[in-house]
Image 1 (spheres, rainbow over the protein chains, first blue to last red):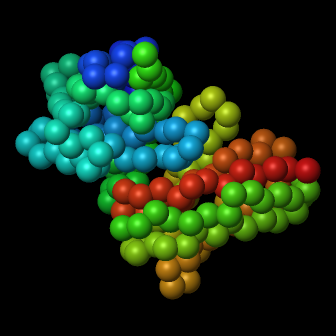
Image 2 (image 1 turned 30 degrees about the vertical axis):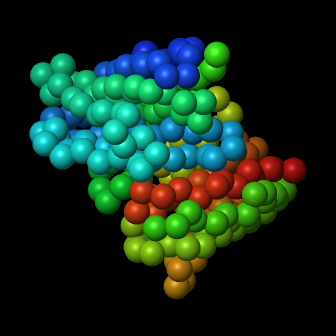
Length: 118
Length: 100
């Protein structure tokens, strides 16, 4: 059974940091492109970042570039999102997902809520 | 790519058919996701018209020009959900489907 389990969300003050984790099982993680996607009531679904299977290439939406860093540990079947200098507009449910082809996401985690508020 | 445009709502009675449009697509890598409240999105259609295993054949996809469509035939109560299209890393705003 495929599972993606996110953790690390919570309440943080503006300017603070959080590190999200996503543990994968049930598929070949080491050959999979992985993504972080977030969802807010106002803006719907939004792709945030992706990382190639070997971790050598990453990309980010403009609004988080320079503040967020995506990484992975293939030995632990895990992908991470380090979020720094958090802003109120980063408040969302964050999902990790697998991109199986051309930005099509076949496996999703259950999501973890990040709330940025003072 | 600019955001994709979907109607905010759609509805139909059980057994009827409904179609949801998605305008602004730029490639044939169009996908559709179903999301029930409090749940993660689920892939229903990829590459315009392909269905992942386990997705009922009541769900179908098509594309004409820059507008993609998701069609659901023989509506079931459990089809009531939000539906999102996706293309080249961009998502539509979502359509809330109500089964009357």
